[in-house]
Amino acid sequence: MKLTGGEKAFVTTNYIVLTLLTLIIVLPFWYVISVSITPYHIFSEKDGMVLFPTSFSFEYYEYLLQKGSLIYGSYGNTIRNTAGGVLLALFLTATVAYALAEKKLPGRKIFILYFVFTMLFKGGLIPTYITIKQLGLLNTNYVLILVMAFSAFNMIIMKSFFEGIPESLRESASIDGASEFRILWRIILPLSMPVIASVGLLYMVVYWNDFFNALLYVTDWSKAPVQLVLRSIISSSSLPPELLEAAGRTPPPTIGIQMSAIVIVALPMLIIYPLIQKYFDQGMMVGSVKG
Image 1 (cartoon, rainbow, N blue to C red):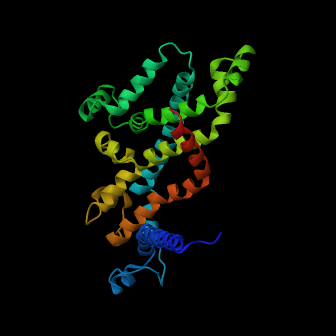
Image 2: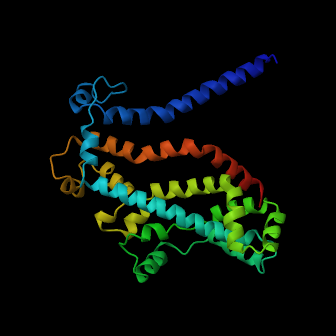
Image 3: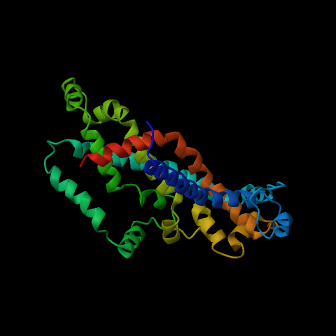
């Protein structure tokens, strides 16, 4: 179909705007990568304008990822927190969503209102801190997993998806003697991979990027997640003492350490997201059209 003059101008403008937005997003991260693999003497000669490295060096990565370094250990903490947190969060979210998707559940509307209320009003930072302290979770390996283990928003998305599954499947399985947990595990969840992937990704991003809870509840650097270490590195003009003590040798220039730390922390999400993006899109679309 032939485009009119106005339509051609509109399409051209869209291409220009989208190209500019792409450059705005991509160029800063490309610059970070370029600086992280450029020797410092070349970086200094070019006054920091390094978009296309002419020489490569991985000394910054070697320094950060050497065995025994602070970021090496914190990376393991983040992987543990993210893996354990996502599994626990998906279990809690799926079981609550499955129960609330049952329209014959006594008091269903009251329970739904209860969860929606928590999205509008929260207990506050100080009461949450006091509760965690009284439970003995401060400065433990479990606090960063438990504190974010449930989201009412994600539960509503999953509940909406479950409601779209034919009720006859659950009824036939129940007639055959299957328990509710067996129905959930063997029938509902296998049919719900799009929403599980989308909600799992939401939880994964939250757990991976969390540093604020670690800042509040963790004082032992051996239990700190990598995001807290990254914050400490990039928020100071000099490297934090904890990083220097853990590394045990003379550090490379700070600018390279900062850029390398950003790449190390961001890379996993950049790899994982494209792999499950199609499931994420499907799950979010389903959750957006059902109440």
